[in-house]
Image (cartoon, rainbow, N blue to C red; front, side, top):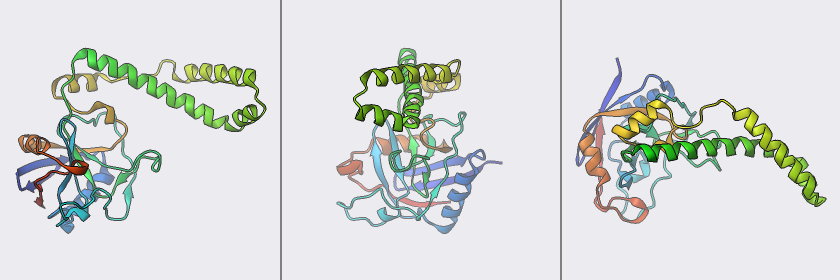
Length: 244
C-alpha cells in the first residue's frame, strides 16, 4: 500500500503519494514529516507554468526580503532515477544543487517541488526528442575529450592543429559507435504523458521524482498562478501549516 500524506497549506490541501521505487527519498520524507520539519515553511519559489518549490527550513517566519532556497537538514540523498517516474504535471521531485558542484545529482535533504509545466504538441515533442538525443551524444563526446585531456593539452601547447583535427575526428567516430542503436530521445511513455497530462520533460533524468499529487491538483494550480516578486518568491506568503 502506497504511503500518502496531506500537505495542508494556507491555500488548501494537497494529497500526495510516495513511490516505493525510490525508497531513500520515501523514507527520508517520512522521517522529516514525523519530525514536523515542514510545518510553518513556505512555498518559497514559484514559477508559473513550471513548478512550485518548498522545504527550506529557513523560510519559516522569513522576513519579506530574506534570501531563501539554500536551507536544508545538512545532508543530501543519492539520486534514484527511474525512467518510468517522470515529471508529469503533479509529480513530486527533489530539488538539488547544479551539476557543476553536484556531478552525481544528489538530492537536497528536504527541498522538493511539484511539477506543473505544459501540455506539448506532437511537433514540439519531436523537436525536444531530437534535442535530447543531441545533448546525450554531446555528453558522450565531452567525456571522451576529458579522457584524452592530457593529449589535447599537449597538442595545443605544440600548436599541432593537424593532430587536434585527427583526434577530433577519431572521438566523433567513437561517439557514433558508442551511441549507435541507443534510444536517447523521449520514450513512448513520455510522449503520451506530456501530450495529454503535461509536465516538464527536460527535467527527466536530471532530478529524482519520488511521488505525485493524487488530490488537490487545483491547489497546485492556484499556487503556481500566484503573483511573485524577487527570486520568484510569492508576494503573499503561502505557508505549509502541516503535513500529516
